[in-house]
Length: 240
Ligand SMILES: [Zn+2]
Image (tube, rainbow, N blue to C red; front, top):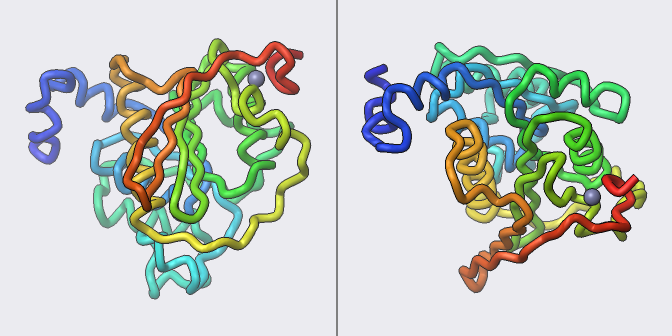
């Protein structure tokens, strides 16, 4: 427990909270820019079991922001490169790599093994797969997304607004092709750190979780704002 001394000093953590973190199971969907910071934070917190879903290999152009991957892991599956990073940093953590593509047939089943799911995917098709699946379970999903200098985070469960409640126009958009836009590490790691903080609060049952709330970050103006969300009665996903 010495490793987690500074976690334990927090009143809202303590030894019992640290044991909760050590026995928690979190699934990180996407081991790219958001996934790098989320995985590093979960490993720091001492989350006992981290599942990682990704179907890609490490490329040179990833390294401006995906800092858990290295020159020495170029060409390697991202899930294996991420596992290597975690094992060097905190060998006590169990890591389960999934080199798969999630779809509506395999996602709910996978969620059953985890307490919290973190959306670090980079395309709307995959993000909606996660949001659609979470409302069929008792689990919690932390959504995050980044584009150029801004990003957003919200936390979704079956009783809250889902992703399609607030962006119904993108549902069924078949946006499974990643739009190639500029992105830098400070913005993506800011958004991902907020996602990791959400997961931490969910595991420890703390207040202030971003349910029914969209937090929007603007890295140029250094501005955070919150938008209240409600379940959309005409939501193409959860109103069915
Ligand atoms: Zn909905």
